[in-house]
Length: 259
Image (cartoon, rainbow, N blue to C red; front, top):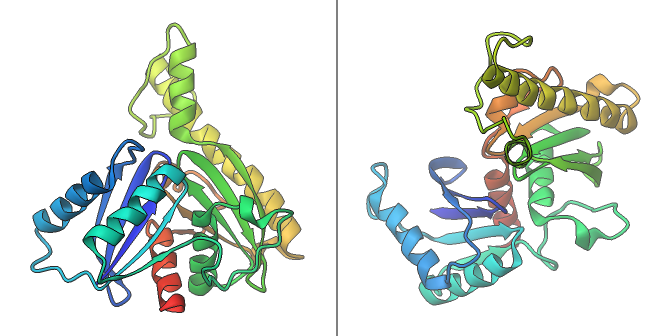
């Protein structure tokens, strides 16, 4: 089975593929202080405790990381504990099949290129990928499969934390859909502002990107992914598809291209 690992700033998402199907998945906190040995303990514990798996045989590993210190430890973990397994790490020199049309291609996070590859393979282009993570990223892919640029906005969790820390009478709330947009209490007012506010942000940016990507904006497919996507996808009119495993699927495709 292929183990895919997406290391984000806040969470690390892991998925186990049997051919092209995700048969098990996990989400753990990203901790830059963890050593390679600690990462191996966490990983092996997850594999051993899964009720869906028996005698897991990891035949390959594909990973990407936006946290350099964690990437170093992940690399060491692969070397020490899975030395006989082929590991593909998304970094310069790895074949992705996605041309990057940016002023400085090295600035683009590896996860964004992975998402672009998966979206193109699954849905074709042109497309826009909205990734709801620590930051909310918007990535534009042309009809020819080129990564042509994007936008970065503060993520939902960051915005909620900032609001709670700066507002004397405001506090963190459960992020669920309120009864109405016009709220009757502070908790629902926060929920309304956060959920509908981010949905409006997504629609506004996607609308502008689609107009730049294609003569007919309706030809642009909009794909949502990321841990916080479920909070917004039902409220954002512009999102066509919600694919929670987009990055993991992209990692599987890149592994296949490089092995």
